[in-house]
Amino acid sequence: MRDSASEVAGIRDAVHLCIDMQNIFAPGGLWATPWMERVLPTIAAIVAHHEARTVFTRFITPEDPQDRPGQWQSYFRRWQQATRNHLPPSALELVPALQRFVPPAAVVDKPAYSAFSNPRLAGLLRDKNVGTVVISGAETDVCVLSTVLSAVDLGFRVVIVEDALCSSSDVGHDALMTMYRTRFHGQVDLVTAEELAEFWHE
Image (cartoon, rainbow, N blue to C red; front, side, top):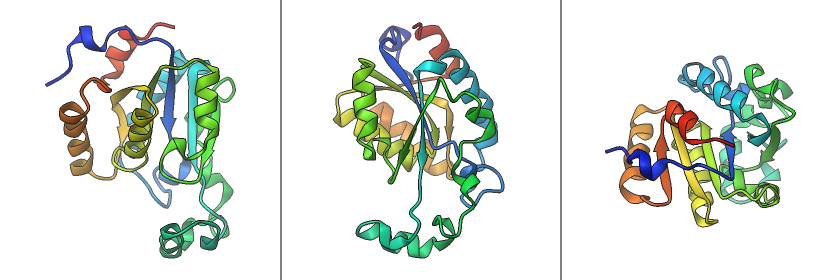
């Protein structure tokens, strides 16, 4: 059941955190996410309304698996093609439809799933006096999930734009939407892009 409008209303002191909308996840990319093309116009519309309040993240792979700690080494040995020794640099860039917003939108690179794995992000949000993060991007059940949980732990209010997310897994996406509604009430709100436009006024 959707949160009531009165509970979701009043988005302020917010930043739009757009997760990993990069060429590597676009059609034809090594880790292509089938839904990306479908949600890209929605994400671009959100950014267009909040350019200076948008932060894009990029998942930056290592040059070599040994450059990362622990289990990341075995992960990138399995995905050698995704290391920067093998990957074209353009693969890690934002998709062109979003790159054009930078600047004034900011870009934060990260070495792991969560956007907050780069400590620069938390500092940037504090400098902007941010209380709420509005989240879109890829993938619902990996980097978006990790970012949402980190944001909750750090005390941010989290607003997820559910029609501005993409995943490789319908099952994973649907399971996460259910989890947010049933387990994170009061910390995580789900809205559509249309509702976001109604509730978020800078």
